[in-house]
Image (cartoon, rainbow, N blue to C red; front, side, top):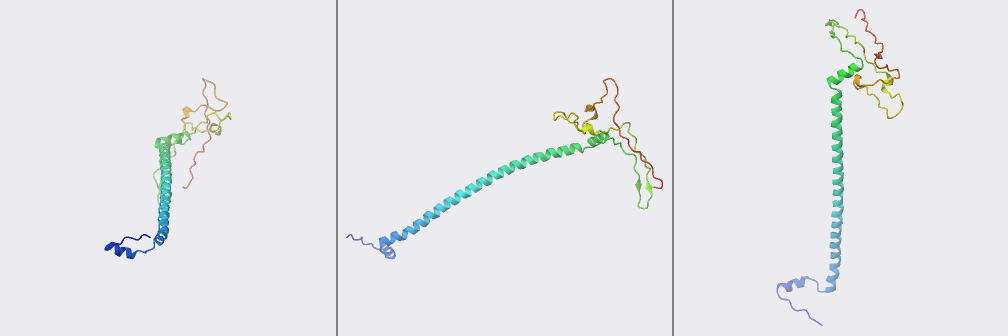
Length: 187
């Protein structure tokens, strides 16, 4: 039988603190090693899951940034259209196309009922342009026929009715009867 070498000094004191059985030392190390392996494996799996979640979030963030950019561009284009349609010249042109005329001098009422200013009627238009319903819908029924826009210039629209005037003769514009305002006595 082999005998252990004698330890001296500090090593002897440390040896007395440790258990003497080697099998018992091996048995005590197994759960510790298993615990360390499980902790390392769990940590690696946790890091992989965290990395995957961060990558997925990064892709979603990129997609949302791209979508935000597209929507911002679309909003700016729509705002430009709104600004173009609400410009004074565009409103005036559209009003004239609808047969509207500029109003005359306004009159104002005081709280006590007196009239301030001298009201005057709007000047009558020479020939107001009124779009017939058939001008807004295609007459041929084919989907390839262009639909005239009510916002287009009057000179740019081609006649769409079947009763177009022959070349060289003047066509009469379609007009609607416009009621004339009648002054109310006592007001």
